[in-house]
Structure formats: C-alpha cells, structure tokens
Length: 228
Image (spheres, rainbow, N blue to C red):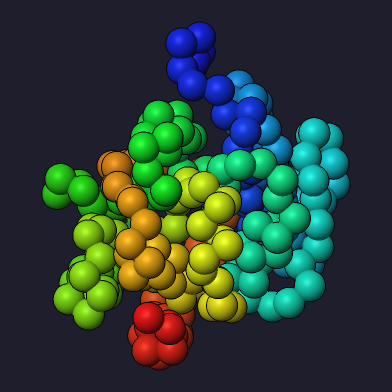
C-alpha cells in the first residue's frame, strides 16, 4: 500500500520490536515498515536460535540482544536506548497493522499517550480463542474498575507515547504485566490519553509465545504490585 504524502512524518518516532525466533516473519514486518520511514527501529532479541539476527542485519536498524529474561524487560531495554521524542512498540509476527502508527501520530500532539485497542466499537481479534477473549474482557473490566482506566483492551501493547512521561513514571514489570502497568500509571498520573481502534491481523507466521494460563496468572499477580 502506498502512503499518502500528506500523512504525518514518523521520523521522530522510535519503534521497539521484541523478537524470539521470528525468522518466518521478521523480513515481512521490516519490509512493510520501510515505507513508513520511521525515525529508528530497535529490535531487542531474546537470544533467538534461528536466523532472526541474520535477516535483521539486512535492514537499517539497531539490533541488540536482550540482557534480562521476560517480555517486559525486552520492551524496557528497547525504550532505554531509544532516542526519539515519541516511542511505540509492535510485535514481530505481522499481526500489528502499521497504519495505526500514522493515526497515533496524528493524535499525539494533543495527548501524552495514544493506546490501540483491538476491541473498540465491538471489534474482535482473529488471534482470540474462547479463553483469550474471556480473559481479556475480565482483565480489562478489572483494570477499569480498580484503576478507572478508560481503555477497552488492557492486554494489547501497541501505544505511542511522549518520552517525557518517563520522567514521571517508572516501568517496573518484567513480563506481560507491562501491558497493564503503562495505562494504569498514565491514568494515575493524570496524563492525557486516548484510544483508537487498530484491527489486529492474522499473524503472518510463527506461533504465539503467550501461554494464556501461565502468563494470565502472572499478569493477575502483577496487577497488585503496580504502585498507584
């Protein structure tokens, strides 16, 4: 898809991508991102044993090997070396639609954070099993009631935020609890935020690294450790 020249520049955006054995999809994702002219792409790799690093070396990006275990740590390590004013994140399986980057950028000047939701307006995710769909609804409702967050998808980490918020909040979660931690702390600090619909696509290749029961339990425990 060719982008309209009138669309906002993303040259002041750092995009973090966490990878773990993504050789089947990483070239698809990076080829698609070329047309968006993103300021910097940072791949944080969890010690892949396949050709992920070799393939990524063909692209103009910053590739680092993750130091600490856990998805949350991978995201935080990418954020820690980012240099642009705005920071975003996406997975490496092709399920994130990059067109949302332009919509988030169009709203970020009047917000501190823009969140994406797969379910806004009653939409659904093609990656949902019955357990995943119910679990997400329960987690989201819990986050809404406990913290007052005005979001409709608490487990989809596809934000764009002004790096200045990091001067006022710390991100402490090492696992997928980070998905919840960011909106909770943004809400509690009274930062201005909004939410857009970003329809999730069927993953291009590979298998999910998320275990609905194991990671769901970790997130549930982690919610109670979030400092309000």
